[in-house]
Length: 275
Image (tube, rainbow, N blue to C red):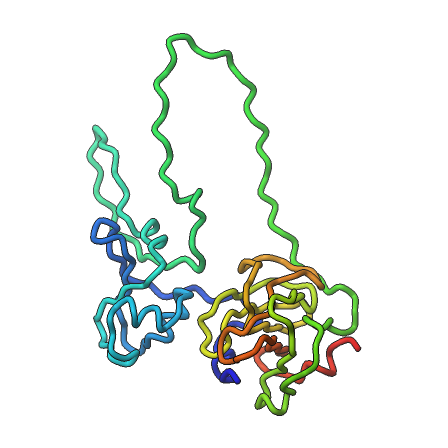
């Protein structure tokens, strides 16, 4: 069973907090993103920060053990070269009027990898044609309207995320949740309307994990997923498919570990699930 303390450190009533400032190696220096270890950090906390696994960092840096690190040491963050786009120096266009160079601002790592289309360099402007093209009407500007916050579906109980017998009950799981037997690849459904606040595999023992915050103050957790098909920040409706059952993490047969937390406190989900 996964450690109850591990998931307890993840966000519950709010989204994942902003991450601390980091040091990046320019793309020209090898195309890899590096993190400089600060006091109090461990490979586990660094892995969670960048949404990679501890083992991936150990292998990328040829470390003999996850605890063989020191303050000030630079470690490669594998698979996160996308972060270099936010750290690469920008090119300044020459101006006839000299300007003082601005002081470098503190840089904060984004919580999710930026969209490749947003970080791609803008194409060079085309040369002006010999004859001006006919004037065209300006395109209609559409205002960006933020997605409405989800509301409860109206049901007085959560729905079962997957059909199957309970392999491990709340008491046997040491007060974390329940494990439900499920066929490999079976669709896993959102238990209620809500907002996805975590998608990843950075919590030891849980494998692929999705967390959903619900309007009534509960957070639901879905672990050991074989695949995940929702993104952090997305709003989901009760019954939407958020992934497929699998056996990632600390299990050896396909199943779903399901939790319900009221704020940060785990509760037995069975009485709160519809019959």
